[in-house]
Length: 248
Image (tube, rainbow, N blue to C red; front, side, top):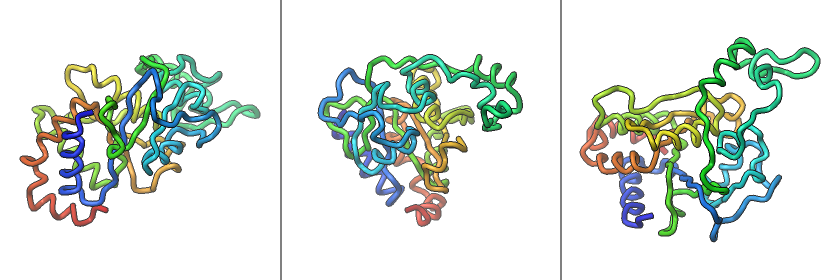
């Protein structure tokens, strides 16, 4: 990680977003280095809950064994399969055996959905999460993840669209909370038209977040263009100053 870039963004973030929460980052790695490797069962079962520690400044490395949720292992790229009867779990359930989440109308619809879902294979055995201010020279962040109030998300959304000729610089795919901050943005980094991902609409994961927070995740290369654009964008206008007063 280039420390000059790290410091520059931190300065600009404080200038235009005041006391808003700093983003966290992740990258895949063969070794944890100086980062704490998560022991199985030591943190919340849901990855979003476990990442609360990272948001508070604790750097963590997760392996397949660290992630207790089967969905989490899949969306981080550590496994291919899904739970048995997943199509019923996500829809109507099985009377007397399984309560359905009812996020989809029917098991058949879930099966069709699954056919079209992107699949991620972890390129290395560990995924390392660090808050932005904890990054060091040896780190190589691949995705930047913001957890922000709606005004913060609106600012990031407008900034990622600032240099785009289309209105689709960001998208909001339905899926598990961890898919919106890991799977989708990680795969977007190889897209010819890289987009940011707005997420954390997952009803099951939302109890691990403050009630007024959503996520905004963007591949590192696209994030750097956003940083370069900050001081010539709407952030220097009176319109943004009105919102900035409400942030933090």
